[in-house]
Image (cartoon, rainbow, N blue to C red; front, side, top):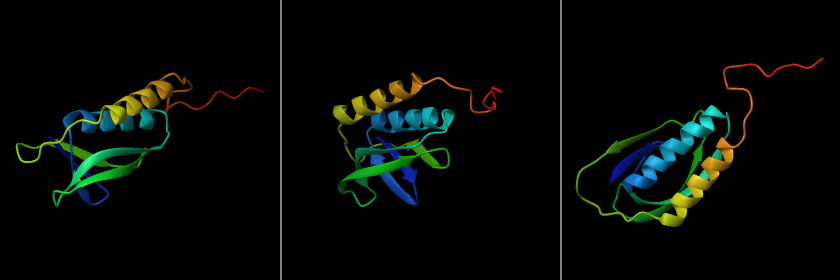
Length: 105
């Protein structure tokens, strides 16, 4: 289980879900893109919730491992959707983020 700190909230997620989110956020940042992703989680109060996270260059969140406590099952549909979105974005190639777009005159 991992704890995700995002927008002033703490959420608990399955390791695979938290890892997929942070990896997808990295890819989005590399492409200067944004996306909203909905995943299952458990609130800090211990309630099961469905959360939608806006992932972009400015969306800072922290993922940390935690021991014991809540058991959370992975949501395979959510994991597959995140992976598919990541692969579609990785298939788009353009200028790397730190390089200016070439001007054609």
